[in-house]
Length: 381
Ligand SMILES: [Zn+2]
View 1 (tube, rainbow, N blue to C red):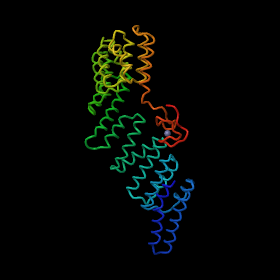
View 2: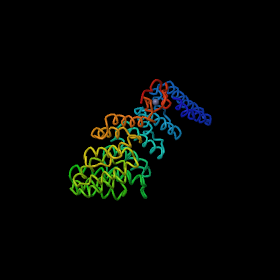
View 3: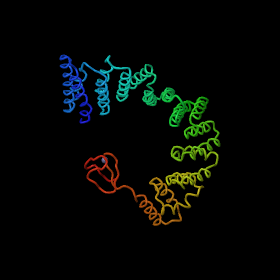
View 4: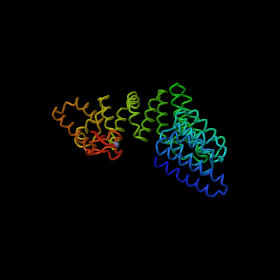
């Protein structure tokens, strides 16, 4: 609440100064009343009576350029504290004032749109931001929340327009990527309905917006798979995966299915082996491939060594146990000691404790979390 005091104190001074400046006694009395109103409002805020404070501010008859600024900030602060109703009341009241300049009206309108957005009233928020764009074409900052609204309502064409409106000249890469995603979303919808011509059309647009998009490569592969061009699909999936190794999780099943159809499991296994060279998490998939297709052997050759020497993730260790179960060369004791090695490696460097409130991890038990300052919230990780 202290921040409100800092916010409003200058106003009290301003009102006092205004009063002193005026010679006319009547005006002086009125201005002193304004200062009194502010002090009263601040007092209510400080004593945690925001509704009473709101009444004082809303019933305050005179709003000029200085007080308007403060009202605006006060409303935004209510919104940031999650008190959207109060923010709305204040901003709506301000909007109805005739004494605002054009720029102030635009700023209040933007704040009002943000209030509606925070309240989840997307239709109203959209209406306010659109009106703001229509009445004040240079208020392109309204395109940011508009884009967020259209993302939520899955109105991708409109989301594209809102992205373009942010930048009239050459779009930055981040926006090009966004637009590629929006076209890809539309392609996904058409793919589900089997409109492959439409899919091609949207893929072409997405590709034109951002040529390096891994998502577009995946869509191209999906399209070829739908057309039963498995060789082409396989090639495109591998290209997407080489481009972005993080896609291994969502693409693994698709690639395995296509590779099985055209007898290319070995090739896929080689790529996974290569990925494993850079990222240990690829091992889980490599081992899953061994489990699905016992004719592949690369993984089993180095598995025993790696279980002993590398720090593998828990999924890879779990998959390794599946493979070890079928290994006849190792004794049961050897298998157990290998798993123990792997688990000890995994636990090394892993945080022992974690805050239940904020998730902060730590090695030693602490009574008070150093991140969120809550007491008695630390537990075993
Ligand atoms: Zn915490």
